[in-house]
Image (tube, rainbow, N blue to C red; front, side, top):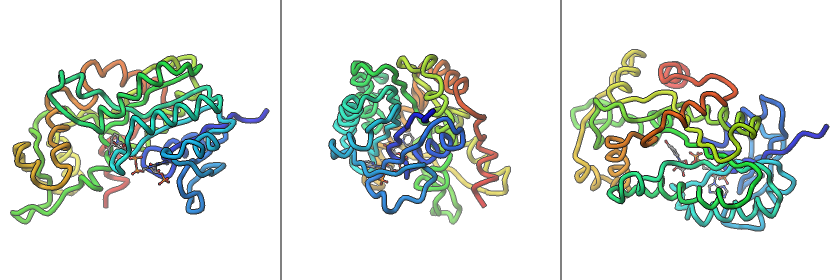
Length: 293
Ligand code: NAP
Protein backbone atom coordinates (compact mmCIF):
# COMPACT_ATOMS: atom_id res chain seq x y z
CA UNK A 1 0.00 0.00 0.00
CA UNK A 2 1.27 3.49 -0.86
CA UNK A 3 2.45 5.42 2.19
CA UNK A 4 0.72 8.65 3.20
CA UNK A 5 2.72 11.82 2.63
CA UNK A 6 3.66 14.33 5.34
CA UNK A 7 4.79 17.76 4.07
CA UNK A 8 7.19 19.55 6.43
CA UNK A 9 7.54 23.34 6.35
CA UNK A 10 10.84 24.53 7.83
CA UNK A 11 12.46 21.22 6.86
CA UNK A 12 15.86 22.93 6.62
CA UNK A 13 15.52 24.53 10.07
CA UNK A 14 15.99 23.52 13.70
CA UNK A 15 12.43 22.29 14.24
CA UNK A 16 11.69 20.80 10.83
CA UNK A 17 14.97 18.90 10.49
CA UNK A 18 14.15 16.77 13.54
CA UNK A 19 10.62 16.22 12.24
CA UNK A 20 11.93 15.02 8.87
CA UNK A 21 14.58 12.82 10.40
CA UNK A 22 12.29 11.13 12.93
CA UNK A 23 9.54 10.53 10.37
CA UNK A 24 12.01 9.06 7.87
CA UNK A 25 13.50 6.75 10.53
CA UNK A 26 10.07 5.70 11.78
CA UNK A 27 9.17 4.64 8.26
CA UNK A 28 5.37 4.86 8.10
CA UNK A 29 5.18 7.95 5.89
CA UNK A 30 6.64 9.45 2.73
CA UNK A 31 8.31 12.65 3.92
CA UNK A 32 8.24 15.77 1.75
CA UNK A 33 10.54 18.66 2.65
CA UNK A 34 9.17 22.09 1.79
CA UNK A 35 11.74 24.86 1.31
CA UNK A 36 12.12 28.09 -0.63
CA UNK A 37 15.33 26.68 -2.11
CA UNK A 38 14.83 23.04 -3.10
CA UNK A 39 18.02 23.07 -5.19
CA UNK A 40 20.06 23.56 -2.04
CA UNK A 41 18.31 20.85 0.01
CA UNK A 42 20.70 18.25 1.43
CA UNK A 43 18.45 16.67 4.10
CA UNK A 44 16.98 13.19 4.53
CA UNK A 45 13.44 13.71 3.20
CA UNK A 46 12.17 11.38 0.46
CA UNK A 47 10.95 14.31 -1.65
CA UNK A 48 11.72 18.01 -1.76
CA UNK A 49 9.47 20.71 -3.19
CA UNK A 50 9.47 24.47 -3.40
CA UNK A 51 7.10 26.26 -1.06
CA UNK A 52 6.97 29.72 0.48
CA UNK A 53 4.65 30.75 3.31
CA UNK A 54 4.31 34.17 1.66
CA UNK A 55 3.24 32.64 -1.67
CA UNK A 56 -0.08 30.82 -1.30
CA UNK A 57 -0.11 29.07 -4.73
CA UNK A 58 3.33 27.57 -3.99
CA UNK A 59 1.98 26.19 -0.68
CA UNK A 60 -1.03 24.61 -2.36
CA UNK A 61 1.31 22.87 -4.75
CA UNK A 62 3.62 21.83 -1.90
CA UNK A 63 0.69 20.33 0.05
CA UNK A 64 -0.84 18.52 -2.94
CA UNK A 65 -1.88 14.95 -1.99
CA UNK A 66 -0.37 15.32 1.48
CA UNK A 67 -2.13 13.52 4.32
CA UNK A 68 -0.46 15.67 6.97
CA UNK A 69 1.48 18.92 7.24
CA UNK A 70 3.83 20.28 9.90
CA UNK A 71 3.93 24.07 9.87
CA UNK A 72 6.34 26.43 11.66
CA UNK A 73 6.78 30.15 10.99
CA UNK A 74 10.01 32.06 11.55
CA UNK A 75 9.35 35.21 13.56
CA UNK A 76 13.05 36.06 13.54
CA UNK A 77 13.01 36.41 9.77
CA UNK A 78 10.28 39.04 10.10
CA UNK A 79 7.34 36.74 9.40
CA UNK A 80 3.81 38.04 9.83
CA UNK A 81 2.92 34.81 11.66
CA UNK A 82 -0.84 35.34 11.55
CA UNK A 83 -0.76 35.95 7.79
CA UNK A 84 1.56 32.99 7.15
CA UNK A 85 -0.47 30.71 9.43
CA UNK A 86 -3.64 31.78 7.63
CA UNK A 87 -2.07 31.09 4.24
CA UNK A 88 -0.88 27.63 5.34
CA UNK A 89 -4.34 26.74 6.69
CA UNK A 90 -6.02 27.89 3.49
CA UNK A 91 -3.60 25.97 1.28
CA UNK A 92 -3.95 22.84 3.43
CA UNK A 93 -7.74 23.03 3.29
CA UNK A 94 -7.70 23.36 -0.49
CA UNK A 95 -5.25 20.46 -0.80
CA UNK A 96 -7.52 18.26 1.34
CA UNK A 97 -4.98 17.77 4.14
CA UNK A 98 -6.31 15.51 6.92
CA UNK A 99 -3.94 16.33 9.79
CA UNK A 100 -2.53 19.82 10.44
CA UNK A 101 0.24 20.08 13.06
CA UNK A 102 1.01 23.66 14.09
CA UNK A 103 4.11 24.75 15.99
CA UNK A 104 2.77 27.26 18.49
CA UNK A 105 3.65 28.85 21.83
CA UNK A 106 1.70 30.08 24.86
CA UNK A 107 -0.34 33.30 24.51
CA UNK A 108 1.66 35.65 26.74
CA UNK A 109 -0.76 38.57 26.31
CA UNK A 110 -3.66 36.54 27.67
CA UNK A 111 -1.66 34.74 30.36
CA UNK A 112 -0.23 38.03 31.69
CA UNK A 113 -3.50 39.93 31.37
CA UNK A 114 -1.92 42.23 28.77
CA UNK A 115 1.02 43.15 31.03
CA UNK A 116 3.76 41.46 28.99
CA UNK A 117 4.36 41.63 25.25
CA UNK A 118 6.20 38.78 23.60
CA UNK A 119 5.05 38.83 19.96
CA UNK A 120 7.02 35.73 18.95
CA UNK A 121 4.98 33.72 21.48
CA UNK A 122 1.59 35.43 21.18
CA UNK A 123 1.72 35.76 17.37
CA UNK A 124 1.85 31.98 16.99
CA UNK A 125 -0.87 31.40 19.59
CA UNK A 126 -3.21 33.70 17.65
CA UNK A 127 -3.21 31.20 14.78
CA UNK A 128 -4.49 28.39 17.06
CA UNK A 129 -8.07 29.65 16.95
CA UNK A 130 -8.03 29.74 13.16
CA UNK A 131 -6.87 26.12 12.99
CA UNK A 132 -9.46 25.06 15.56
CA UNK A 133 -12.20 26.51 13.38
CA UNK A 134 -10.95 25.26 10.02
CA UNK A 135 -12.60 21.86 10.00
CA UNK A 136 -9.53 19.67 9.55
CA UNK A 137 -10.36 16.04 10.43
CA UNK A 138 -7.30 16.12 12.72
CA UNK A 139 -5.22 19.00 14.11
CA UNK A 140 -2.60 19.10 16.85
CA UNK A 141 -0.69 21.91 18.54
CA UNK A 142 2.95 21.35 19.47
CA UNK A 143 4.82 23.75 21.74
CA UNK A 144 8.60 23.72 21.37
CA UNK A 145 10.71 24.62 24.42
CA UNK A 146 13.76 26.81 24.88
CA UNK A 147 16.18 24.82 22.69
CA UNK A 148 19.32 23.42 24.35
CA UNK A 149 20.86 24.55 21.05
CA UNK A 150 20.33 28.20 22.07
CA UNK A 151 23.00 27.69 24.74
CA UNK A 152 25.52 26.95 22.02
CA UNK A 153 24.22 29.41 19.45
CA UNK A 154 22.75 32.90 19.40
CA UNK A 155 22.07 32.86 23.12
CA UNK A 156 25.37 31.14 23.92
CA UNK A 157 27.93 32.20 26.53
CA UNK A 158 29.71 35.45 25.59
CA UNK A 159 32.94 37.10 26.77
CA UNK A 160 32.10 39.20 29.85
CA UNK A 161 33.74 42.43 31.10
CA UNK A 162 35.66 40.55 33.82
CA UNK A 163 37.24 38.26 31.20
CA UNK A 164 35.01 35.26 31.97
CA UNK A 165 32.66 33.55 29.52
CA UNK A 166 29.02 33.56 30.44
CA UNK A 167 25.61 35.18 30.27
CA UNK A 168 24.28 38.63 31.16
CA UNK A 169 20.50 38.33 31.19
CA UNK A 170 17.46 39.90 32.87
CA UNK A 171 16.41 36.83 34.85
CA UNK A 172 16.94 35.54 38.38
CA UNK A 173 19.39 32.63 37.89
CA UNK A 174 17.95 30.72 40.86
CA UNK A 175 14.42 30.44 39.39
CA UNK A 176 13.57 27.10 37.79
CA UNK A 177 11.25 28.49 35.13
CA UNK A 178 12.69 27.65 31.71
CA UNK A 179 11.29 24.55 29.98
CA UNK A 180 14.11 23.18 27.83
CA UNK A 181 14.87 20.31 25.46
CA UNK A 182 16.93 19.25 22.47
CA UNK A 183 14.90 20.71 19.59
CA UNK A 184 15.60 17.60 17.52
CA UNK A 185 13.31 15.79 19.97
CA UNK A 186 10.32 17.78 18.68
CA UNK A 187 10.32 15.33 15.77
CA UNK A 188 9.55 12.47 18.18
CA UNK A 189 6.45 14.33 19.40
CA UNK A 190 5.30 15.34 15.91
CA UNK A 191 5.81 11.82 14.56
CA UNK A 192 3.81 10.46 17.51
CA UNK A 193 1.01 12.89 16.70
CA UNK A 194 0.83 11.82 13.04
CA UNK A 195 0.86 8.16 14.11
CA UNK A 196 -1.90 8.61 16.72
CA UNK A 197 -4.43 11.16 15.41
CA UNK A 198 -7.13 9.30 17.31
CA UNK A 199 -5.40 10.22 20.59
CA UNK A 200 -4.07 13.75 19.93
CA UNK A 201 -5.63 14.87 16.64
CA UNK A 202 -8.61 16.69 18.13
CA UNK A 203 -6.82 19.83 19.20
CA UNK A 204 -4.45 18.41 21.83
CA UNK A 205 -1.57 20.56 23.02
CA UNK A 206 1.77 18.74 23.25
CA UNK A 207 4.53 20.64 25.06
CA UNK A 208 8.08 19.34 24.62
CA UNK A 209 9.91 19.97 27.88
CA UNK A 210 12.55 17.55 29.02
CA UNK A 211 13.69 19.75 31.90
CA UNK A 212 12.55 22.78 33.88
CA UNK A 213 15.77 24.65 34.58
CA UNK A 214 17.14 27.79 36.16
CA UNK A 215 20.25 29.42 34.72
CA UNK A 216 22.13 28.08 37.74
CA UNK A 217 21.09 24.58 36.60
CA UNK A 218 22.50 25.38 33.15
CA UNK A 219 25.78 26.57 34.70
CA UNK A 220 25.94 23.41 36.81
CA UNK A 221 25.35 21.15 33.80
CA UNK A 222 28.18 22.82 31.87
CA UNK A 223 30.39 22.77 34.99
CA UNK A 224 29.85 19.02 35.34
CA UNK A 225 31.20 18.71 31.80
CA UNK A 226 34.28 20.83 32.43
CA UNK A 227 32.94 24.20 31.19
CA UNK A 228 33.05 27.09 33.66
CA UNK A 229 30.60 29.86 32.82
CA UNK A 230 29.41 32.88 34.80
CA UNK A 231 26.03 34.58 35.10
CA UNK A 232 25.19 38.25 35.60
CA UNK A 233 21.65 39.36 36.26
CA UNK A 234 20.75 42.80 34.88
CA UNK A 235 17.48 44.71 35.11
CA UNK A 236 15.17 44.30 32.10
CA UNK A 237 15.28 48.07 31.36
CA UNK A 238 19.07 47.95 31.10
CA UNK A 239 19.14 44.76 29.01
CA UNK A 240 16.57 46.28 26.62
CA UNK A 241 19.14 48.89 25.52
CA UNK A 242 21.81 46.30 24.59
CA UNK A 243 20.71 45.49 21.01
CA UNK A 244 17.77 45.68 18.66
CA UNK A 245 15.11 43.23 19.79
CA UNK A 246 16.52 43.01 23.35
CA UNK A 247 13.30 44.51 24.72
CA UNK A 248 11.34 41.47 23.53
CA UNK A 249 13.86 39.10 25.13
CA UNK A 250 13.57 41.08 28.40
CA UNK A 251 9.78 40.78 28.31
CA UNK A 252 10.12 37.06 27.58
CA UNK A 253 12.42 36.55 30.60
CA UNK A 254 9.97 38.52 32.78
CA UNK A 255 7.23 36.20 31.51
CA UNK A 256 9.37 33.12 32.34
CA UNK A 257 9.94 34.40 35.88
CA UNK A 258 6.27 35.00 36.54
CA UNK A 259 4.58 32.17 34.66
CA UNK A 260 7.36 29.76 33.46
CA UNK A 261 8.12 29.19 29.75
CA UNK A 262 5.13 26.91 29.07
CA UNK A 263 2.80 29.01 31.21
CA UNK A 264 0.26 27.88 33.80
CA UNK A 265 -1.10 24.32 33.80
CA UNK A 266 1.69 22.97 31.61
CA UNK A 267 1.86 19.55 33.28
CA UNK A 268 -0.85 17.89 31.15
CA UNK A 269 0.60 19.24 27.89
CA UNK A 270 4.07 18.01 28.84
CA UNK A 271 2.77 14.62 29.96
CA UNK A 272 0.86 14.21 26.68
CA UNK A 273 3.98 15.01 24.61
CA UNK A 274 5.95 12.44 26.61
CA UNK A 275 3.24 9.84 26.16
CA UNK A 276 2.85 10.26 22.40
CA UNK A 277 6.57 10.64 21.53
CA UNK A 278 8.15 7.83 19.48
CA UNK A 279 11.33 7.75 21.61
CA UNK A 280 12.97 9.09 24.79
CA UNK A 281 14.24 12.66 25.01
CA UNK A 282 17.85 13.75 25.54
CA UNK A 283 18.76 15.41 28.86
CA UNK A 284 20.83 18.63 28.95
CA UNK A 285 23.76 16.66 30.34
CA UNK A 286 23.60 14.14 27.47
CA UNK A 287 23.21 16.95 24.93
CA UNK A 288 26.28 18.80 26.27
CA UNK A 289 28.31 15.60 26.15
CA UNK A 290 27.28 14.99 22.54
CA UNK A 291 27.36 18.51 21.13
CA UNK A 292 29.62 20.81 23.15
CA UNK A 293 33.35 20.20 22.95
P1 NAP B 1 15.46 28.09 11.73
O1 NAP B 1 16.34 26.98 12.13
O2 NAP B 1 15.98 29.49 11.75
O3 NAP B 1 14.92 27.81 10.26
C1 NAP B 1 13.89 28.58 9.71
C2 NAP B 1 13.07 27.67 8.82
O4 NAP B 1 11.90 28.36 8.41
C3 NAP B 1 13.85 27.27 7.57
O5 NAP B 1 13.67 25.88 7.38
C4 NAP B 1 13.17 28.07 6.47
O6 NAP B 1 13.10 27.34 5.27
C5 NAP B 1 11.76 28.22 7.00
N1 NAP B 1 11.10 29.42 6.51
C6 NAP B 1 11.31 30.70 6.90
N2 NAP B 1 10.52 31.53 6.19
C7 NAP B 1 9.82 30.75 5.32
C8 NAP B 1 8.86 31.02 4.32
N3 NAP B 1 8.46 32.28 4.03
N4 NAP B 1 8.33 29.99 3.63
C9 NAP B 1 8.73 28.71 3.90
N5 NAP B 1 9.63 28.39 4.83
C10 NAP B 1 10.18 29.41 5.53
O7 NAP B 1 14.10 28.12 12.53
P2 NAP B 1 13.42 27.17 13.64
O8 NAP B 1 14.14 27.40 14.92
O9 NAP B 1 13.21 25.82 13.14
O10 NAP B 1 11.99 27.87 13.74
C11 NAP B 1 11.88 29.25 13.95
C12 NAP B 1 10.76 29.54 14.91
O11 NAP B 1 11.01 28.82 16.12
C13 NAP B 1 10.67 31.01 15.29
O12 NAP B 1 9.41 31.53 14.92
C14 NAP B 1 10.84 31.00 16.81
O13 NAP B 1 10.02 31.94 17.46
C15 NAP B 1 10.44 29.59 17.16
N6 NAP B 1 10.92 29.08 18.46
C16 NAP B 1 12.22 29.17 18.82
C17 NAP B 1 12.62 28.72 20.07
C18 NAP B 1 14.05 28.79 20.53
O14 NAP B 1 14.32 28.45 21.70
N7 NAP B 1 14.99 29.18 19.71
C19 NAP B 1 11.68 28.13 20.93
C20 NAP B 1 10.35 28.00 20.51
C21 NAP B 1 9.98 28.49 19.26
P3 NAP B 1 13.93 27.69 3.93
O15 NAP B 1 14.91 28.77 4.26
O16 NAP B 1 14.60 26.38 3.57
O17 NAP B 1 12.90 28.09 2.94
